Image (tube, rainbow, N blue to C red; front, side, top):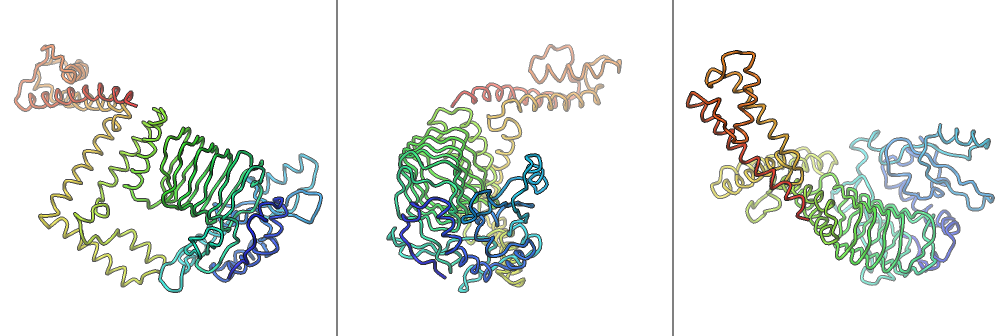
Length: 505
């Protein structure tokens, strides 16, 4: 199924309502029919919430019908003319929506409360929500993906194909210069590949883009605010000499995106597999949250990029926070190093969780899942029984434990106050030992003073002061006291190193 090609610039020159009306009458009805034939129980979901084709095509943006959790509300716009009437998402409950209009003494416009399709499918369909991406393979998904492009080497003629079968509306391959307004347009399920945005002013209103192909998109010497990309393919996104503020990239994918000579403020990279390189960027309030199932090594590398960029911009506090997270994910990568070191651990058969997920989706049978599980078990058995790989695997595990110890004791140098908590814990632990084994110390016999003396002796031993008024009498008590003194020396060294570490950025 294909949306006929039209000159993309003609769409951008339309007012936003005129553009949305064109989509409601032309390509969105085709998209509606495509979803009805492809998405599991799509018509059942529409019937349950009373959404017909006309309403589906007039929700702006269309993607609001699919993402999110819980009940959502769409309400018709209040406009004088009924010619271009659309439904828009409201972040309020139906009760609050009606109450607001009662307080204004006006009737509420028509609205519809519904549960987004993917949340509804997960709740009601379970395994049945997964559908085959391509008849030629067994891969099954429960979301949107662009997996094919035509004429991809010619920007003006390339077409993005949704779910392998639907060529969406072409809006890319052109350059948007000053005063081409982007706000309030329905840019969901569109082909924005090779779109270039230049100059300073692109109109008021937030820009929301959901489930669109945005490959090779570029921001060049522009000033943009309040953009949100959700579930988009942003392969090779480029941003050069631009100011971006209040940007959110949610569940996006893309290889080799880059930001250079930019000012970034309140930019969030949430979940997904999308993270750019930064070069000479001034950054403020950058948020990164890795997606479920992300490779710990890749996440650690992404935090390293952020740390390097923050250091280059002189953001010491941000660099410190990024370094701490970088080390945490580096530790997680050490716990399961097999995929990241194929030359050392050849024959890696994957993770058991991946096998379970593929079986749950219906990509593999139960017999195939059992075989894969056995193969994974044999791989791990081989790693730990082979002299060649045992030492390497043990080395990774020891490094993992050392890293875990570092985090607990002082948070990799970025949480120096943890050192004092560690010190107080050790002092308390040794004081308890001294209290219960008081006869093995030259301590006063009165039990009323045992607790105070135990704490006192633990403190002076830990700090290696050693006044000599209380001494161990037995060999094993001498070893216990010596071990506390060693812990004390080590901890005091960490105190100095920890606070010195805070000023290294």
